[in-house]
Structure formats: structure tokens, C-alpha cells
Amino acid sequence: MVDFILNFENSVRLSFFLGIFSVLTVCELILPRRALSQSKSVRWYSNLGIVVFNSVFVGIVFPMLPVAFAVLSEERGWGMFNMISVMSGLDVIICLIILDLIIYIQHILFHKIPILWRFHRMHHADQDFDVSTGIRFHPVEIFLSIAIKMIAIFLIGVPAEAVLIFEVLLNATSLFNHANIKLPRSLDLVLRYFIVTPDMHRVHHSVIPKETNANFGFNLPWWDYLFLTYRAQPENGHKEMLIGISQFRTPNDLHLHRMLIQPFILGSEEKV
Image 1 (cartoon, rainbow, N blue to C red):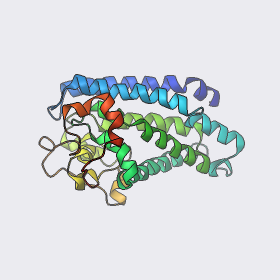
Image 2: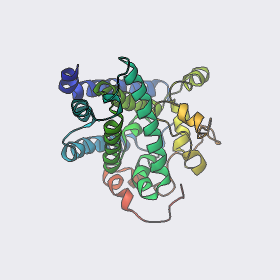
Image 3: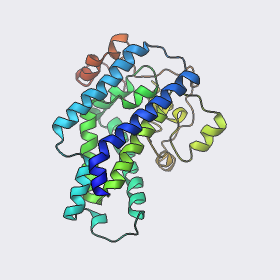
């Protein structure tokens, strides 16, 4: 199993990404939730371009990625689950839940700590909300997120298969909950018990700070319910709500080179 994970990790992740991205793109064309306000060609060039940039950046900066680090941790006996005996499969489920909680906490920290917000706000500066928004993250945020996951793997002893499953799930749910698709309200209400839906996460991309500071979950919605950060609907409705942040609202702000330098632009910025 370990050999399979190490040999085919990139193929598995890329296959899931391309498959889910393609399906959601078609769904957005058939059942759009909102009319887009900005040039889709510019946004997609920039949002997909940042993925390519991040892939090169991560490859240069990290000689060992989380899955390989999990294998090394298991070989060295690092972390709690590598020191205790747990029923086969149960450790994977527990670790998936713990990792999701860590990402939830990380997300809140990226909103509450000013220097971290400067990098995370690039994700929020997208003026429309569709599947491409789910992959729009600044390379410094990607770097910090991987570093946090590596620390968690080291301390918890997360099995390599759990890390791979989590990476695939996190990527898939980020694409899904940013998708511009209209789900039946009854289905959306049921899904919200198990997974973050597009309508639930769209609230988080509102220009209104009290809505931006709600619905932090990416995969599991439970943490928002438990820690009282859940907000059911935007006050202006999904079709009329304004997406983005107030500081970056020109068409030029959607270009790739502008996205990369956004964290270093000073000015009057809304308090998050």
C-alpha cells in the first residue's frame, strides 16, 4: 500500500482534480446559481495560472510533501498513532477528522491574524464565485498550509493513506463548495449536515465582514455548528450579495501579476 501511494500519489490527485473540475464546470454551465460579473477568461487564466505557479513553487521549496513525510514518520515511529495500537482503519478515520479540524482552525487564524490575512485575502479578492475560486490561493498561504500539515503529521502520526485521502477530499470539496451551481434547497439543507455546500460557503465570500467571518469549514460543516461560526444565508440573498473584498474591486485586480503582489499592497483595508 505504501509503495502504491508513493508511486501513484500525483496520478491519483491529478485524476481526481481533473475529473471533479470538469464535472463541476459542466454543472455550472447547465445550472448556474449566479450570473458572473467579471470576464471569465481573465479570471480563469489567473486562477488556473496561480495553480501552475504554486505547483512549481511547492516543488522547489518542499523536497518532501505531506504523503512522503507521513511514510517517513511511520518508519521513524514519530507521532501518537505510530506509538499506540489502534484498530485498522479507525486511525485513518480519526486522523481525517482531526486534520479537518486543523484546517478549520488554520482558516480562522488566516482571517484573524493581520499578516496571515494579507496572504489569504487574495482568495477572497475574486469578484465572482465559481469552481476556479476553489484553487485560487497565494503561494505563501500554500507554503504555510503545507508546513502546518507537516507539523500535524509529525505530532499525530497520520498514516500515509489518511494523508492522501485527506488531500484528495480537501481539493475535491474546495472545488465543490466554490462551484457556481444551483442545488435544490431541500438537497442543500440535507447536505449541510455532512459537507459544506456552495450556498453555505458562498456566504463566507461576502464583502460584508460579519459574513466573511462565518462558515470557515472547507470539508466538514460540523466545526462551524460546534464553535458558533455558522451563518445560514447572506443578508442580501445569494443572487444580490456582493462577492469579494472592498479594497480590490477593479478588473485589473483579477490579473495574475496583481494577485501575486496583493499581500504587499498597503492602503485602507476593511477590518476582518
